[in-house]
Image (cartoon, rainbow, N blue to C red):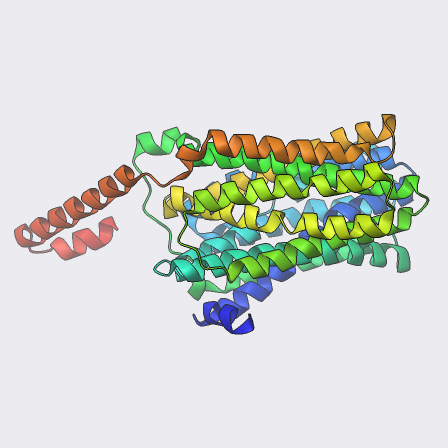
Length: 435
């Protein structure tokens, strides 16, 4: 396995940007728990903590695609560096406001302003797509690795944040996350030799229409939103079920097992060489995920206990990584390079909105129904994702016509440049200036 993944790191700088991005993404996975624990401890209100956290998630979901569009237009470093530095001020403001007991409204001002950060995971995938643009097998390995790293971060981040908050002081988890996010983003942006070049600005009409007109993206985003609902409701259902059995402290460990199952399956999926299209793999992955998420529901309904539930969650988690990898591959295939960061950020936003909605729905179900009933929500959300994928399957394939048109336009532009070179003595300078 190591030998297979080692080959994707042969381009100079690949290891450096991967480690820097991993640091920033680990910090991102710490902020949710760090915010909730900090506010709940200082203000003795989980309701307030949840509301502030939800506003931050909503801001990220809206702001991330906008930053992605700027990244596509101006480059990763030119957008990532100023955005993370600007966010540092309101981030520090939130820590000070909570620590010194400032009015509640200040939290809802500082935290959204501090939450608008670039999508490091999307930018890392864009770098892999550029570095291995002529090697589909290497891109598949890279996408699988990125998904496994995501799962690793979401296993370790919340645990690290909780440990810092409980062993040091309530603000320690969020403070450490902020420092790591800033440092990781700056280090990532400093790796300029692996940064994808900025693509030429598209024609006015195409830019006005936006990427949402891409049929494949209009399928992937709703599928990811439904998948996010499954993730968010699964978290609440697991914590509520373990609490009902008098083992609330084990809830985090059970969720970590599910993430571990996804991490392992992601790495294994990267080694699978298939000639099937990304659309076909996505449909298969969503179907597997929908089937596997029935396992926790069956275990909880049977009253088999937490030990068997742990096994069910680990196995159920193995269906999520292939789905996410295939979905991101579809996004890379249906969008031009000049829209890649915006498209992947939009997909991630769909997941985040789904997680928020899933947490709310799952919490309501867990509050008013018998223990274990909450597992019906992730199972239903996965089934919905399967229906959406099947219904939009034809839109998930790249449009050959648009590819041919783009190639024809490139040939026409090259021919025009050649004619201009023959006609004008100083044409080379003119063409260079136009670029």
